Picture (tube, each protein chain N blue to C red):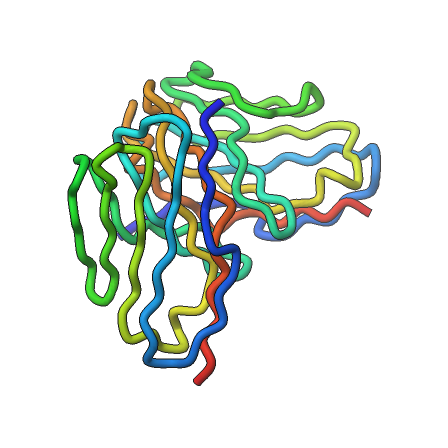
Length: 113
Length: 111
């Protein structure tokens, strides 16, 4: 069965650069969630979208923004990168309001040097 | 916000042993989820619990939804080397828009 696709899988950036992470949800899933997982930490919710509208917001820095497109894929844009932004970024998808049935992608490992 | 406290933080056991880990919360959850995460990969859902008192099995895994709705446990019987990984409990917020994760239990199995 098709799963959540994330690209790139690995990304290396310098401080103060920008990065864009992409997420393609499972077919027919209309809700996308973004999580950040630091080394040795549990995943922390950043933001979620349904039908191109932001549906919930967690601990997402102002330097980050995200959007969902009409084909339901989503992009997380990160600017003025800091060393502390180095982490695994996961995207998950579900049907609307079914956070308990969300499926996670393999993640993008971002390293900021 | 909602917080989940998971214990133990890590376990190192012998192959064949049974494992138990639990998760507690100061607030009520209507759903409890247990995920496993392998290194560098995304969390994979193992068991979902939807009713207080519910006991659900998935192969060698058994999980229970506490009666108070503020706790859950996960048992793994007859552990094998591929059980190695980090196990997270998680619960959705009331609006069903996001998951809150516990701190994780790192399981190591010695062959």
